Length: 333
Image (cartoon, rainbow, N blue to C red; front, side):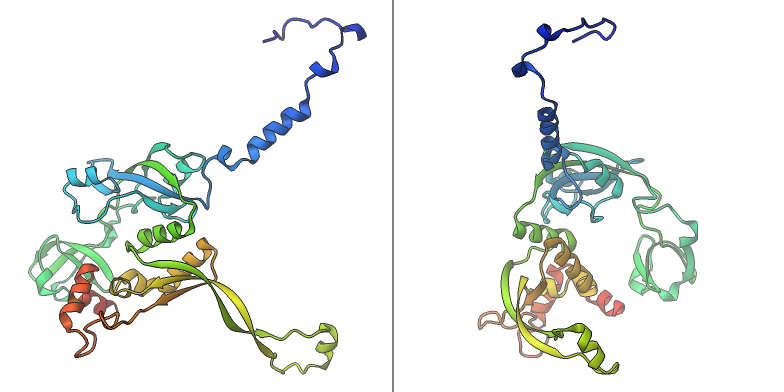
């Protein structure tokens, strides 16, 4: 390495370097530019589909908030009937806390991190005004005990105390006011489109669905465009309606096989349009087709909804498997 304090000797023509030994700034710059254009050089970026292993704890008392690690779930006594595995998320789509997402951007497969998410960003600060005293008559008799989760006037809360005809209910989120420590590991970048779709359904609805992509040719009405828009504008009446023609167009479609679990999923029932639009945008498709299959062996996709179609027991089993409270759905509707 040269010492900047030392003066370099003057060079005459005989001392000049041969052309073959001269440095080539344009080549060095070119190499740097290639490295910068390589997406791997910049690490993970917004829009990337990744699989993430994580465990989240409350900072103050180490209560488990969520995990994808089966060993942690078993140690904490969480119901291990459910599957614990890395979850698919899309960076930049709000699928995880913003501060965690910011920490992941720029990293790569196998990288880990630990981020403390402040309460305000996590589940909100504790609000004393959300702890209210209400009439006990607004609560079902089966739920009139401390610790019961209740819904009152559309708000969900937990009963703190019941005295006489009054109940003290906390309508804050159970984790309000608590900072969260979020430990994660990036396990994979998801590239295959079907895997992307399956991961999104698992993350958004906690469902494992039969899905596939196909290109369909469909008929669609389109406005007839005039050959000369300027001439047409002069001849048209301002109140005249546009002309349409039916044309055949190709649509890239995501097909989903309808199941009782999907049909009775509360998030799907209440937010079908929003979830569908999110899938269309993230997967770059034109439409989603939910396909119900009726065959001779299984009957209709919603057994038990009509007399003689399979009995109420099948419906009850489907509701139970999907972890759905039918009374709660009826109340929401």
